[in-house]
Length: 64
Image (spheres, rainbow, N blue to C red):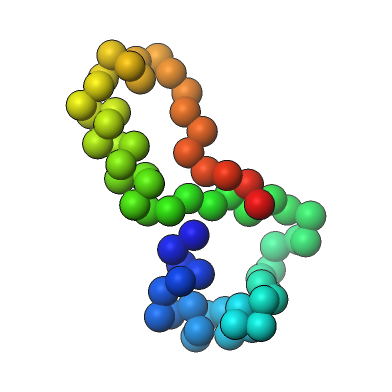
């Protein structure tokens, strides 16, 4: 998700500023997104509360 906000986005995805995402993926393909800040918050919580996440599967990304 952060890739769309970075300074590089204007170089890598120039049409994004017009609301168009041009990629080589098919239009019907779901794109899973996650914010790196949210990822770090989850990782910290998982390390601090190991028993809470033991043998659990957690979905981190949301498909859009």
